[in-house]
View 1 (cartoon, helix red, strand yellow):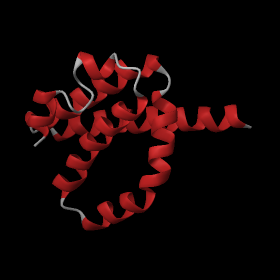
View 2: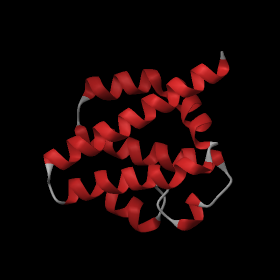
View 3: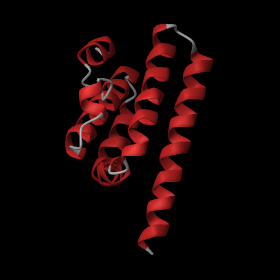
View 4: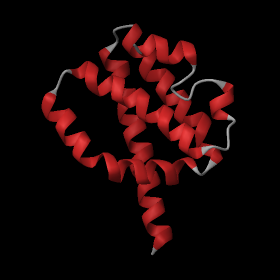
Length: 116
């Protein structure tokens, strides 16, 4: 399934999606990418937790994506995760996920500071 997402560019990987000004479309592509990962984990507790946080995550995701400067970084992080999965490289996957989470957490902190 991840292969199809990347092949079709629907995970925000195609130039058309990345260069788009449609934040909602980019956010939807980001959600599709993450949903495939969550489902592939087959971790019901993780899926339940993430489903309960979905609305809050989407709110911050769309705010984050309003900054066009982050689009290419986001796609690059997704590509790194995808490559690590294909290579079955758990260490690389762990590093790429941690980097992605750190960048997202920093972006949310920055948004909260700017709102105050």
